[in-house]
Each structure stands twice: as structure tokens, then as C-alpha cells.
Length: 250
Image 1 (cartoon, rainbow, N blue to C red):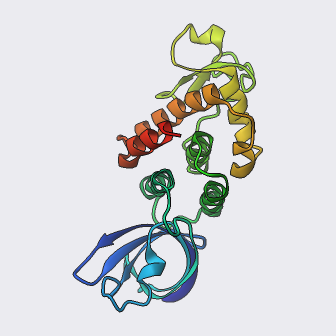
Image 2: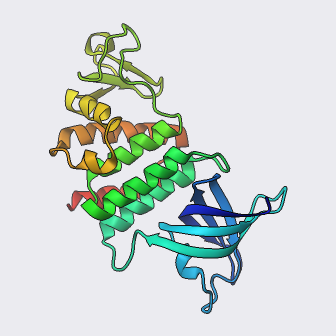
Image 3: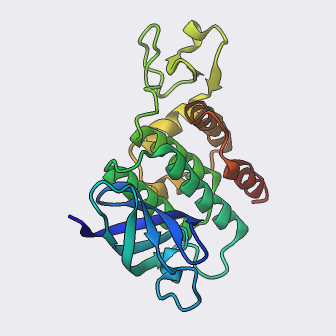
């Protein structure tokens, strides 16, 4: 259909002309899409405020067959997650989440679980504040829902279950090794981090951040997630360093 309605989260926007922008959206119905917002940079634009990053919106898109870019005809704000006077940590974390999705998610591939993950993580960050545990939760689940998270529950060599014990992650190979098989090689993931990874599979982001503090586990998971993201994207995301500096001030 050339004209359709979507529920979306605004990830990014880029300048297209003196008055127009390209808006990058994570939609519920179609996955990541790009659309032109004509006249949105003009002072009298009625939809400019709706199309700021990290806004949850309902849009009417016009998409011609064979065109990569749609056109936004109407926009309605559902919720603004940055709202008024957001903290630097909120801005840094939410921008990081948006950059991960923008870089890792292919265009026009439906991924409703990932859409729900983004909303649930933004909700948890708004209600509970930004914590390292929430950031690590989002990284791991984003990798998982994109098909980029190896199975670290069992040793790839001997088959031993390691989800409740320490293991060594061979990031480049996408494998886990138990302590005996690893012979000290690989990225060490301590037993608290292994248990936390298992807990992530059963808990919502809000439930996960409500667990007792687990600084060592969060640190290990962060190193693992960052290694996987850097490997698959072949770069470190620009917003990562800014967020890590903001988290150190908490």
C-alpha cells in the first residue's frame, strides 16, 4: 500500500535540504525505515516536535513502489522519552541505544521483539534511571534479537553447562569454553556474570535492574557485549565512550 500508518520510535534525523530532513525510524510494522519529513525545519512546521530522536510516535507514511524513502504525511506524538530537561546520562544512554539500532538493524526487516525491547528499555530508563545494568541488558538483548549472540550456555569443546559457572568467551569464534578447556585463553566471564546472562533471558529490563547490585557481573558482560558489537560492526560506536564516561559519574 502506498499510504500506511505505523507506530515507530525515532532513531535519528539527517538534514536533506534547507527545509527537509530524513527521519530514521524503528517501526513496529516494518522494522527500520527511512522517510522524508518535508518542511520540518521551518518554524511553522506542525510535526517538527514529534520527530525528535527517541520520540514514540504514530505516523502516516506515503511510500511509492520501488522507492527507498517514504514521505511522512502526518505525525502524532505518543511519548517523548527525553522530555524536558533530561539528564546528561539519559541523553547519552538513549542516544547509544538509538545508535546501536541504527547500525545493527537492517532496513525493512520486521523485528517486533526488538521494537518491544527498545520501548521496554526506554520505559525502564525513564522510571528507574540509567544504570550500567540496563545498558548491558539492552546490548545483550539487541545482539540476541539480531541473531548475533552466540550460545554461551555450554562449553563448545566438552559440552559442559556453564551458564551458572564461569566460562571463557572466544569472541571471534563465537564460542564458550569451560575453565578446563579454555586453558586461560579468551575473555573470562565470572560466575556472577554467567548467572546474570541467564537471568536476562527470563526478566524484563525493569526486573533486571531491580536485582541486587552486581558490579563485577555488569563489568564482565559489558566487556563481552562491547567486543561482540565492535566485531560485527567493525568499529566502536561514537556514543559508547560518551556514555561510559557518564556512567562513571553515577
